[in-house]
Image (cartoon, rainbow, N blue to C red; front, side, top):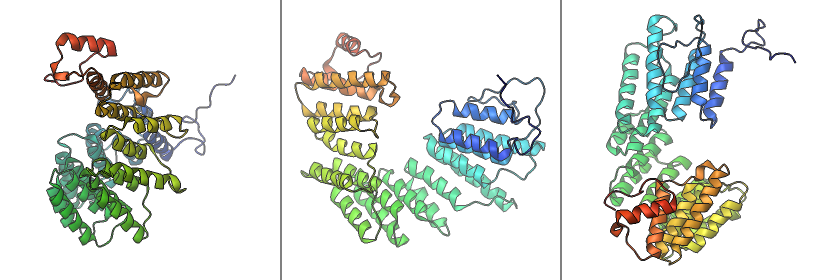
Length: 424
């Protein structure tokens, strides 16, 4: 048989891959779920001559007998930054951005500096990483860009840049900083306002203060779209304001905006945290409305929002039936949260059968995991819920268990670590 054709060394430029070809491959890796996507992307950059002088924790550069000519474009590097951003690998993205600067100073890359897409990608990575100091690092990066701009650089801060910084504030619940930045913007958009509302929701402020400040922002905006309503609904869901959430859905329809699955899901989450006696019934009606509409493609999050209503109130029968529907669905795949919520429903039901039922679900999770569903592998939260069920069935308290009892139960459940804090 003939050997594979080597496109990279081919003399025909019409066949040989160019810079855009490699960027497209890295983008495809970014959109994939491959566990080694980052390593494979680094290998592409090294094949294009990216220097191996810096050891990347996710990089396995190929061994080369002689130096490779540098053929890495800014587009290739931005594609790599975007991949790191999607994986929330902020430290790696920041390191690469600094290396690009070094390569420019050395003359390896001929340009003034990283472009706006480079900074946007690093800020996106910081927004996804969850590090406690991510907002401070994002601020420093934006300041660095602003200084370069003031010194005459081609790279001007964009609204996308400031929205990415707002997202960092939002995730950290820094409402004050988000609101001050919003005031600075000349022409903020719905993403700017939505991120600021998200920051208020995550800030830990009381219900009256948070809702009032969010409504003030909405009044400034003057009109809302699907993005704004999403953040408003999520704010209401945090405080269990089911009636108000449904009123927002109706308001969307009056404004000729079509509420989607994400909006209905937020409203059902609001009912899950509500203390109303009719909360579950109202959540079920919202779910049935989605089922009756051909325009809705109900996802796992929507099922979870209804299941949370059942779990919070100990309605184990309805929770178990809903899980069964998910298992039988050709388009849905339950994960560990799906099962854990059902186990929680048994714990809250107080049933004497809670222990046995929870172990049945645990065995089912392990079987599905062994069959290839890696999203359903039990974790410490799952095990803690199972233990609560068993103790409820035995009419015993977890904090009254002896060390011997704990070890015996861990062996019985085949777990290696006690899933509670030491004082429990």
